[in-house]
Length: 186
Length: 292
Image 1 (cartoon, rainbow over the protein chains, first blue to last red):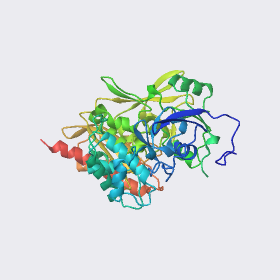
Image 2: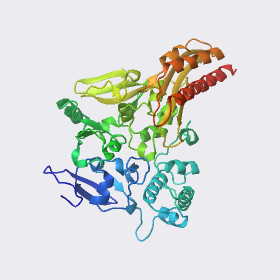
Image 3: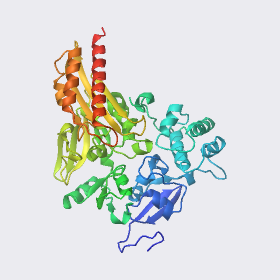
Image 4: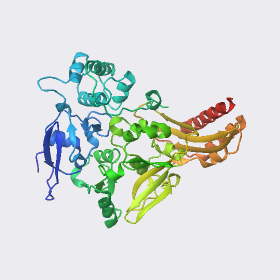
């Protein structure tokens, strides 16, 4: 039995290498193990939370190769070679990331379970769209559920952080669709 | 009961050729997995029956969007976010761009693939009504070669399709001739974001002098798999868009569809909404025809 109470089989698991928050890491785990569980159990990065475990709540959101993903739906083998950022990688040397500071100042966090996912979704949004409209903020966070705040303070936190941050010159292509059409039922 | 990762094997051969060789060597033994937004949900819940999975994630030949003068060719593992970001898809295939925006959240759209949506074959899936309305064609691939089938013939039953045990869905071909067609796509769900469709209707039509020359109608959640509504189309082609035609089309649709009661809605609600969506589109067509 290993530390997590699972029987270890004779079959050697593949070595899977990737980068987490700028550091090279490698793990030997079953290839179907969820990235979420590898982050929490094998790498002890417990900032990433599990909510629903089925991709509906966004608590386990991390950034993988510059895209937002639900880490509960990523088999770790598919993270081979990937560049992963978790909430632990947001904080800057010697201080909080502007989003974290803004959530703190604006009451964007209450119980805290959704907060890491909210922060990662917000970071993804601001990477693509440094000055998002209110509709863009709502769409960017639509996959992240909060049961405490009623969302308004979270939206305000993201808007305040966006107002404070500089536009990113290496801006990725933004979604050109008409949001009022596409995000809504028609 | 939670899924146990040790009970499932997952391999990533890394190239399309190697995946096809594996499928040919042990047909039916390997389940392809792309972005995992369906299979990993089943895995987490402990109801993934596949014991051997082969990863399609990161295979460059499958994550493509290419253009010919006649068609847009979308690789099966293009994600819905890839589709939403694509200028030609936004400009020429707006129904598909809109359907892509309905797929879960950004974190789902970054992983969920168009091919996965089709192979999974949910009757409520978001992309099929748009693909059916655009007359999409499916290209499959195996070590035996490639073949094409009209998307309208891809699904053969509830979560069943024409793929052989050694075949992959390779690409989705969309003709570029729909710019002059009237287009329609509407989904009705419990709420605007992150909700699975109770019912959806997609359509393209050509109307000349008030008469329907061509029409394609496609529905989600009105049959065991995504389907064209061919009888309703026949009730409209060649007819003037009069009140009688609209009423006849409503009656035909009601007799053609077979919705069910399930956790998301009732058959009765789906019937009523479906005919109302149809009427909304037909009235739009008629208004357009009345304008000078």
